[in-house]
Length: 264
Image 1 (spheres, rainbow, N blue to C red):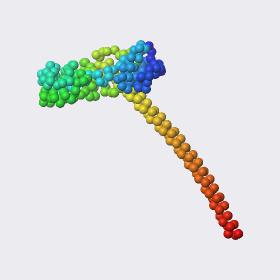
Image 2: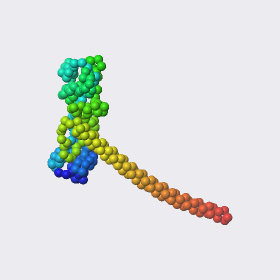
Image 3: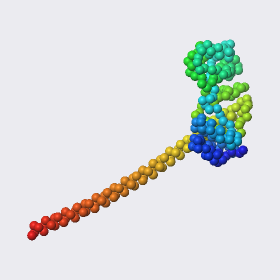
Image 4: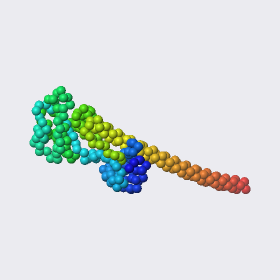
């Protein structure tokens, strides 16, 4: 089914529980990006798209994504099992390892390497960083950054990294093909980042519109109140003038009466 932003607006606005809790962006002729404001809206929109049989793909919400740590600066004959044994030796609660991968960036220096450690979403990263620090003297636990992702693109196997965002993104289009090719992996990551950027821009635009509308409403109310106050002042001034004129006439009448009495 071909999907455009106008069709999706009509479909989603029929459901009151999601109205106003997302932003839309037409990212391609047959692709629309939807950024939900929270995980409940994300789930509700997925259900609507499934009910309407609209093809879509989405990304795992941040709170369900596996976390990644790098054991950096390793040398010697250590392997993945050594790292697992060292972590398990500390008997840390709420720490679960799902995968460990040995990474060598410079193949001319096989004795210098890192371990990419994938842990479950609920695992406390700080527990590993603070407690498992005696594997070798110069090693350290770090979280992947942009420079690490750049280096990872040059490896034979791509490394799955996830952008950190509070938005829950859904793209109403055909899902991308899963592949181990570095070029496709880099392209998918770039598309994901562009989708999120577009969603943030739409949210920023929506916020600016709300601010502008609120300002115009405030300006209108202020002008109306000023006009009402001016009208009241004008009415009170007119009443005061009338009272002054009335009292002046009374005073003139009294003075005239007094003068006539004296003359008599």
